[in-house]
Amino acid sequence: MSSISTDTDELYKKISELKENIVRLKQLKLELIEKAKKMREKRREKITKAKELTQQINVVRQEYKMKLEEFNQLKERRKNLVEIIQQMRKDFEEVKKLSSQKLGNPDLIERRIRELEWKLQTSSLTLEEEKKVIQRIAELEKKLQDAKKAMKIREKKTEEKAELLAKRVELNTIREKIKALINEIGEKKNIIKKLVEERNKLRDEINNLNTEIENISKQIEELNTEIKNKSNELNETQRRLKSLQENPVQVNTTEVIEKKKKSIEEKLKQNKRLSFEEFLILYGEVDNKDGKDNSNIR
Image (cartoon, rainbow, N blue to C red; front, side):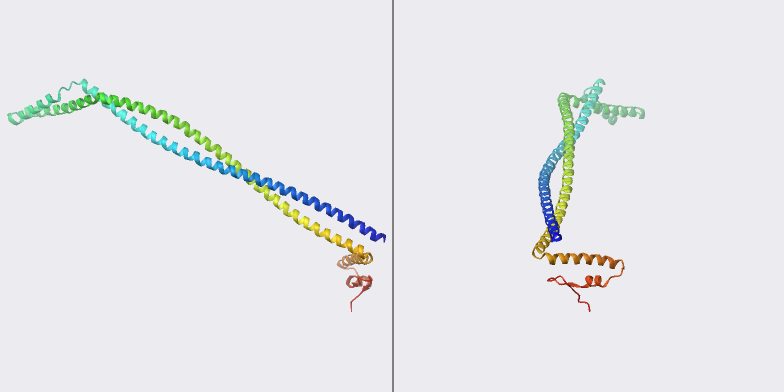
């Protein structure tokens, strides 16, 4: 009876340890589930923030694009104004140059040309004289062209001076706008860069959280398996304890025979010779009622 008492104590002890292990494992599982829950909530917050950053990036990029288009348009306008102002300055220089030549009245020059042409048509001139008249007409025609041009520019001089001043004012305004736009474009680029860096950082954090959540899920699965195994072991131990309490002799005999069988099986694996008694234990049947060995070997 002392052996049965010892076995019972061991089973009670084992049941207690198994229950403690199962409680500990379940508690650890709950802690992991809570940890995973918090991480998922944290991940949702970061995903929401990352989406908001993406929207901000898109808005700033659109603003950047609009500023860039405005910048290119102003550059093109500035180029045209510079060309216009340069041409107007050339015209003023030309007027100044023509004015210094004392070209005279265009009407008088035209009358003189007609007189020379009439002379060619009506007078008897030598070849040399005719050549000189033709050369003089050509000079007068060039002078007439310059005189007309100078007169036309002089007539518009006051108007063009006002226009030149307006173009200069517009050019200065455009230059200031371009300067301001360059600063704004630079600021937009910096904002986009910072937002993208912040979003990339969030994405890295989200990926890390995904990995951690995945690892926790695996740990929970492993704990579920361990809890199941421990529960099965607990049920089996409790069953053995119940059987021992209901029929201590039968259980004790069965356990002794099972131990002997394992020892004989080891002996057999080592190719050692078995006694007749060992042979019967290995291949015999145990009567569950009286514990006797009843061989069915023919």
